[in-house]
Length: 219
Image (tube, rainbow, N blue to C red; front, side, top):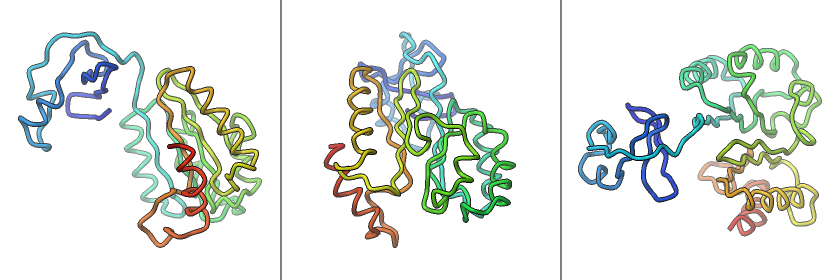
């Protein structure tokens, strides 16, 4: 889905672009050819009547690595508040030092406006410190867990831990993905380390392990 000047749009099961909260449909591909990317497709195109596919707020925000960039973090949170998403996920490295309680206090003061809808992920800077677990009340074992909405099945995993086929987390992940198949929902995997990277972390052990173990599994 994407957000434009006229609101949020999503593709329905027939491939039509449907406006969130408005019973109209748009042929996105036709509009894309007719107008440049900078233009607003919904505003410029002739929109025929049709059924609305979206019945809930489909805005989700995923961000991470706030660490010690407090002033920038405040600006990001202010923008998140403006979007007013259904859920917010933080992909880890919420603080620079997981054992530093003052840093957690600063983090909490910044995210207060979105705290009720915020779901965290363990990064390497949390260092699996008790402060992380004391700071949140999360499902499952709080290291890896799921969050389910009407259309999306979010699976949060800990990429700091071993994720090969012999690990308990891998067995749990496999079971969650099997469960998601029966619901016919879109599945989003959220973790701190990416399996592919163009940065200096491209050949880190975590990155290589995820690429070798999880990518073939997901495919």
